[in-house]
Image 1: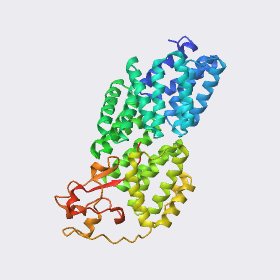
Image 2 (image 1 turned 60 degrees about the vertical axis):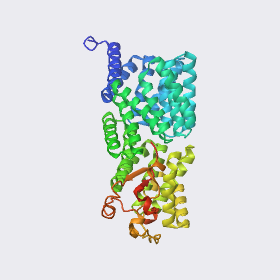
Image 3 (image 1 turned 90 degrees about the horizontal axis):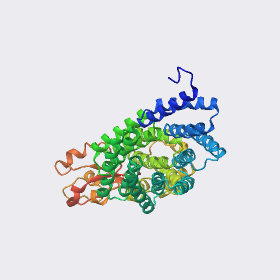
Image 4 (image 1 turned 90 degrees about the vertical axis):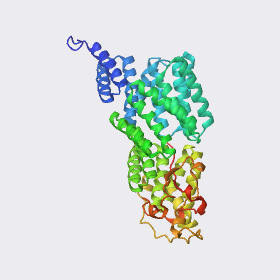
Length: 459
């Protein structure tokens, strides 16, 4: 009707509300197109208030689609107009701040991200906006989570969830439930983690927002991954990845590729795992997402180590270390035991001096340089095996791993439950032939505990 009578303001408003409805339904391409058309009309009309509002909404949308430079430009323009209008307390200003927070957070500038959130929280508290307070508390919790401050993260999430339940905001509640579940997951409390992660999926499934559901599925998939339930983990991760691809969520796509790489490595396919890590890294590098680059380097290092490239693994670990130091984000404690085993294996293969040199090389390289740095795998002389128990061959001793499942919940494990049934035959069918220096022998009485552990970081 508005188009028929040439009502430009009516057209812009209709496009705005149709775009918002499309966004809620997960139709992001259509929503973006309508927001952009409405913005063009508002610019023609000179309506600064609506221009600012559409700018910050568009900024958030293009951020999700991986266009971070455009997102920053749109958000900053929207904030500048809000300041010009003297609007420091409304939706537009707060929303613009949160988009700038997203940019800072995913580029791993955690101090800036926290500072922006604290400004937004002060505004929400002054206004008495309890729903927005819950939302921002949740975001502050995520910053603490990624910096490894699990006590602070738990406190912020619990406060936000309590408030979210009181005001009935299901959208914010689902994100906080998933993130609180990850707090427990990364500390090895799988029972409590499952409680929150399953509630997260249940709520997200009823919201009708595909992007929200994709993250909930991915987080539940992480629990399955840590429990070595590869079938469930793969199913959940692939479902989540399909939604991220469909909605154009580049960061979400890269995160699920990373998770699928971990699942694939756990299943025993090092070559496919490496391809997935590298595919995810191409996106993380474009987005300048340092936290995920570091985590991917740590996972890729484990893969290339078992492929016989310990020097490249050491460089990848060195590059990850320097990134983590710059961000102030240590390797999560739950990952440390498996990580240290892999590092020790590489050090043994290379020798202390060569290992330290390769690690230092990685610390001095850019992420792009370290990815381009692999060299032909050296011929590594296998160390002599320890004395063999009387009913095991030398090779069977070498492929036993000294870490019962109960002792290492964070690690990926290749289940060898068939070991006792037909030990000698099935050992020959292992998909990954690891260098013998990675293995630690068990006594014959403990051989039923055999499992293969590989180190990857959390998402």
